[in-house]
Amino acid sequence: MINYRTYLTEEEIPTHYYNLRADMSKKPAPLLNPATLKPMTAEELEGVFCSELVKQELDDETAFVEIPEEVREYYKTFRPSPLVRAYNLEKALGTPAAIYFKFEGNNTSGSHKLNSAAAQAYYAAKQGLKGVTTETGAGQWGTALSMACAHFGLDLKVFMVKTSYEQKPFRREVMKTYGAEVTASPSETTEVGRKILKEFPGTGGSLGCAISEAVEAAVTRDGYRYVLGSVLNQVLLHQSIIGLEAHKAFEKIGVSPDIIIGCTGGGSNLGGLIAPFMGEKLRGEKDYRIIGAEPASCPSFTRGKYLYDFCDTGKVCPLAKMYTLGNGFMPSPIHAGGLRFHGMSTILSELYDQGMMEAVAYEQTEVFEAAEIFAKAEGILPAPESSHAIKAAMDEALKCKETGEAKNILFGLSGTGFFDLIAYKQYNAGKMTDYIPTDEDLEAGLAFVPPQPVE
Image 1 (cartoon, helix red, strand yellow):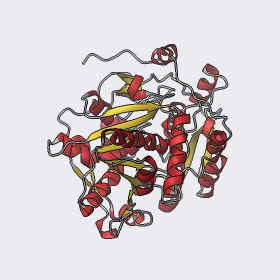
Image 2: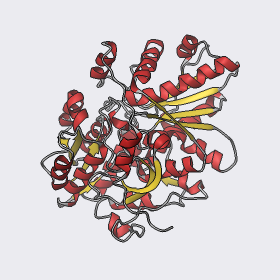
Image 3: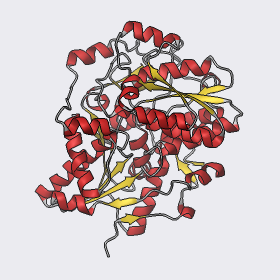
């Protein structure tokens, strides 16, 4: 009998997150205070983030962090997620490869983002906060956080990248349904927003802009803290539940992946998927090819520089050492709004710099071509972000067709595309365009990078 889907039981949902940094001999570079260029202290970070999340952000040594019981109970409303064998896609490609995907879209947010949103909302509520602020690109994170805040009784203010705010009106209505206040970013409601609008008139915004506004909104309101849906160590920690479940599901069927692929914007999806597998690789127990798939219009890995940079356009956040296009880089308004971030997770950046993983970049038209093939074969309409991983997985499967190798390929299907129908409409009408930044565009963005600290 063909086994299409492998599920864990509720009792098999992981009880602990896995902290990949514990197995990294060379740790990610610390966040720096931009004024002193010294590592950020817990006290400094607690002015912006929840106390427990600060502890998780700075902890490079604890391998396993217990998942609170209240969060585990909430996870049971949408977890465990299935590991799916893509038999029909394999047949369509004529490949000897076995293709698997971890499907994270089985919740109202339609994405993996609810894994970290639940944890962050829980810790904020436990601290006794009134509410939190955040940014969102395509809207998956904002939707997930609105759900989690409603569940744990928190107020939520969301700054949504203007391009996505206009492209995805129904996504913002879902956030409002769960009680969130949603503002298009950059906006006139914050000092940093007004500054960005003056400097970049007519801009469609970016995640860097929205982060700046959300941080300002948090620090200027009593009883609020800022939460982030990607990039940070704490987020990759929470998202490790994806990889832990996938690893256990593979053990159930007696299979091990050879290649692991995820889309990359800030790093939460890929970082979560690869966590236990990369841990094995770092410990010398197994070897895997790990690939991050990013948009050619925002190529942090493939064309960025490994530097200390601000995580936000308004330069109100700490400095992070990461692969960056420069905090002044304004990505084109592609439909994969969740991948329109100028930088990358410090964890993934360090691993990439060490040669522990690879990266590829795709234009959005070829990504949607892959999405269409996948949708017809597997019956799931994928999010534009996830479709970058689909494209990479298909490319690897076609290489197997050429060589005759029967490799096992795992990719993260991080979300569904039902709120991205305007993008699919443009693709189907032949009106989708591609944009690859020039070297001059990248130089202009990197011109905003601050002077580098002496290491």
